[in-house]
Amino acid sequence: LAEKVGLKEKIKALLKQKNAVLVAHYYVDSDLQDLAEETGGCVSDSLEMARFGRDHAAKTLVVAGVKFMGETAKILSPEKTILMPDLDATCSLDLGCDPVEFSAFCDAHPDRTVVVYANTSAAVKARADWMVTSSVGLDIVAELHAQGKKILWAPDKHLGSYIQKQTGADMLLWQGSCLVHDEFKGVELEILKEQYPDAKVLVHPESPAAVVALADVVGSTSQLINAAINLEAPQFIVATDNGILHKMQMAAPGKTFIVAPTAGNSASCKSCAHCPWMAMNGLRNLLSVLETESNQIQVDPKVGSEAKIAIDRMLDFAA
Ligand code: CIZ
Ligand code: SF4
Image (cartoon, rainbow, N blue to C red; front, side, top):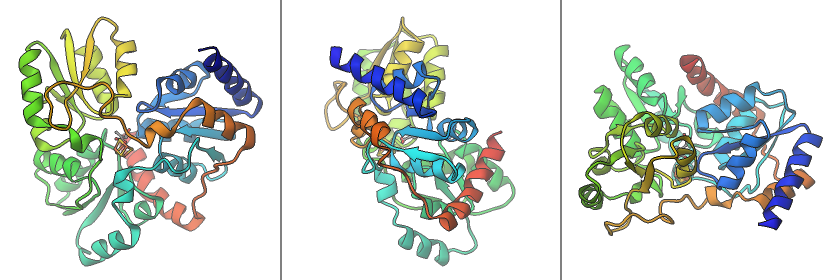
């Protein structure tokens, strides 16, 4: 504990000294979330992280999250220095959508509007017409569908088929998935619901359809946190990365939050459902990148300016 306090104090001093701000995702370690909040940074989902970083006056952004979040920050603010605690922190959706294969897929379907999820590389975003996050993806696809457009969607198949069902849009889906959300199980969730009949079920739409079907609320991380605050219930079963429980518990202290079951057992498991790449962010490597300014995110300027068109479309839509 004393070591933790010491690390936090050093990080706080360096953030100030270097005119840097810490932007953290809800899925990273609670110490990093608290630090971001205490130092005037932000703890949020990928949409709000992107906006906050772009609009903040700091010259250096430290992004505690995964690679696509650092890249998006760099694309929106090429003049800023973007640091990340570990450059190997990536995402199974990003890894599962190779830019060359993706580009060929787009070339094979030139009649479709290309909509990609934020969890992709800069090169994939550069090939897209729109980038969306889970908080606005449904509204954007609904709007494109109303305009008579056919969609090519990548990479998350569960989020894509959820949006397809909700909007009725014609969507061709890339077959990617998130290794954390893909593990939630419908049958086991039903059994857990029987044990907690008063609980409300909050589900991120990267989860399989059988899990989404049991939800009281389906939404992005921010939307699920709002539901945890606003819905009347003693318990909540939560199907998303367990990092989010920290924020939920702080925002709704009287309520109990339970992680939805994964991998073939009906009990919830607090250490399950945690992204191994989000977990690579810690106090030690955060301090080290602030000291050395190593681990700077770089994006090819041409790729970045093409990707920025797709990102700005979403930011303008969501404004
Ligand atoms: O699963 C993720 O990585 C999410 C939900 C990112 C985001 O949009 O905040
Ligand atoms: Fe990617 Fe899933 Fe990790 Fe989010 S939780 S960064 S979607 S692997």
